[in-house]
Image (cartoon, rainbow, N blue to C red; front, side, top):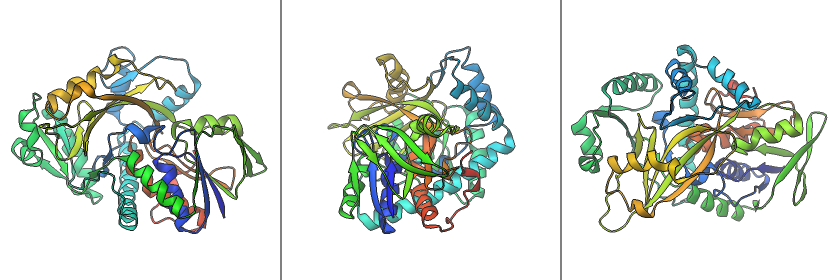
Length: 415
């Protein structure tokens, strides 16, 4: 079959690879070259299966409400009477119960664990080199109460098969010796030895070349203007560079997915863009970045070493589709990163980036078909896009083939 993939981030490129493996003719279109436009470019680089806990919970609801009236360094809310945010917010509130938090966390974990398996298969098949670090991830806490809550969350994922180790200060220094010079006070952490990290931009670029060698086509500078349907089928995609047609279409546009299908098809996807920020710090002679990546939980600060650079990301900002930034937006990241890893790199030469995470209220992606039988959704991966992308690519390819996916995805349909 001829398949047109809309979106060239890590989700779109991974989907193209799985579809090409199945023998399809695949074209990928996007405004940007693969991996350079959206969240695939500047994310923290973590394959964080051991951190696949749902955002929605009674605690998260309290934090979110407080941001309406008080400044918060990580969670930022700009009050706006925006229908998309209001609808999303109401659905998110409905997920903030203990029972739904458990269910959504287990759903996220199941798809993340499956996705890591598929990623490792792809790496074995292609020998891609993307600064992969398979030495695990470490989730850090400075507050004892938060640490104890983290241990409770770890028990949930351990029950689902995740290997997690509770680590005191002495054990932390064995895992990341660079913490010894930290100016931050860390009381403990949770070590996920099977997690990993890597540069998703490099992964996208290399996998794209492999896809091209398999017959895949990639076209950038293509702005999708609308989808045109007839009955229950998509007939064509209208762009600034002409009309594209295919037998099947795969929507991988991340945060921009709901804008396209709402305007073209009248479908409202429960996805809202949550803005994140990152810095990429060059690692120079005598710098000592941490040997593995992880998260500082209270600051929601993700970090990972990627060869000659060190990536740090943070902040969840609800501000619509604005992707701009100012120096002040990065003060929290610089301050916390320098305290945690003061010698990780040359912070004076850091490059700053901001982008949009496509969040669903449940935290799980949207997969499968909706009212149109030849339009397959693979979008809404939120803050675990790099983690879940490989699994959802395989699931999408299976659904297009008419096969039953290896894991259950009934609750992840168009909703």
